[in-house]
Amino acid sequence: MDENQRIADGKVVSIHYSLTDEAGLVLYSTEQEDAMDFLQGAGNVVPGLEKALAGHQVGDHLQVVLAPEEAFGLRQGAGPRSVPRESFPAEAEVYPGLHFLVEDDDDVTDWWVVDVEDDRVVVDRDHPLAGLKITYDVEVVGVRDATPEETAQGHPEGAEWEDGCDDCDCCDDTNDPSGGLGGCGGCG
Image 1: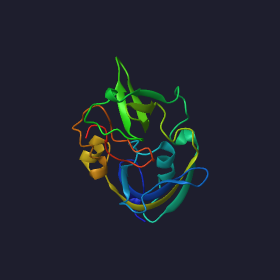
Image 2 (image 1 turned 180 degrees about the vertical axis):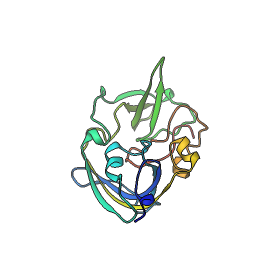
Image 3 (image 1 turned 135 degrees about the horizontal axis):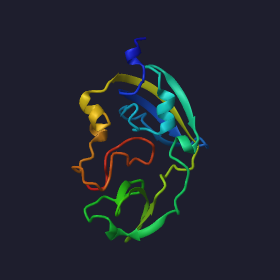
């Protein structure tokens, strides 16, 4: 096959995949959805998956088993904590799995919503899949050169990357706790 169709940095890659935990429980699957597109080399997917896909081509099927360090990291935070619901903008849709950023004096940190109670929200600094050994079953369904715009923005064009919040600084484009990719759900 043409080397231009092999997965390499700067290529937009389309995959179908299922993500399972060590017990084989399916955590997420694109089976009933469109394939997921991402920009190889831009950190759009977990490091171990990006590394494993390099050099593959359309039609390839692979199973990638990843230790936490190559997937969503080790658990290292202080654990979940409860905060008042009013800590979030009133118009924000707050739901388990929501990824958001918190900015303080000189740092920006990642947080995830673990649970939503009446007037409290349980949040955690660790990704919901942190500390887990996970398996991706992947089928490569497309590989193409990224456009200059896609390269500049660090991700492919498409609805799953449109966050709908006009660069609001309260979230980013990686809020999907399942390991899939999606847009912002925080600001609406």
